Amino acid sequence: MLAGCAGGERLEEAEPPRTIAVETDAQPTGSRLPQSINDLLRRVSPSFVTLVVRQPRKKMALDAGISRGVSSGSGFIVDAQGHVITAGHVAVNRNYRVSARGEDGRIHEGTVVAVRPDNDIGLLRLQDRFGRPVVPAASPCLKPGQAVFSLGRPRGGSALARIGTVKSMHFSRVVHYGNYGYPDAIVLRMSTRRGESGGPVFNERGELVGMVVSTLSANGRPLNLAHAIPLPPIARFYCQNAACSPRWQRLAAMNTKSCP
Image (cartoon, rainbow, N blue to C red; front, side):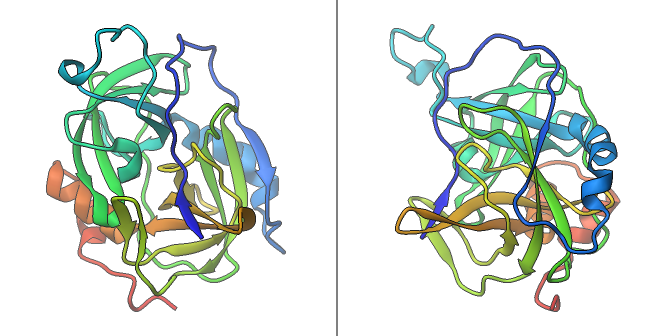
């Protein structure tokens, strides 16, 4: 059983600068990642945001002052123009309103630019320029057993880095949940939770290699497995809807069919 890990959440006031706890779900044998994780977090944390998404104001009820969102999740900054990538089921719909919390704890407002439900990707544009864009890996391929880590904020919890490993570059079948889904995904040995959808996945060099979209369970029991969208479809979606860098353009021209 697969389920996207987003959910509605009430928007709170600004918070103190965040700290990121580290949870190791699958210790990567022989990897230096656990030892270097604090240095990596200092490098990538400025690109990570947590999100609350709400309907456009004209569609909200008379009690619009209540700031409960229709969805919440995680995301990552991709350029200096305020663009953020997240899961499609977090972004929900074009023109929806977005509140993003960055590393400094402040809230930044924006809107949903585009959503692709059949590959579960959303693009947001924030009014403020802050943080630091992610650096995508040059190749979309990952090796089974390779160490990776994700950033997310489980619903009702604090920001969390999860250390895990790659099980496979391919799930090899189409996935659907509600109005969303994807044709294939990276399978991670990692136990994500609701609220972590849209969170970035990084390699041992702190380069972006994917985006968390769902967690796997059997009869309600977590399987310590998650799915992530690989870089090429993220790059194609981003470059189709915004001006992107040459590195992102090269990734947009690639695919993962040749990855082992």
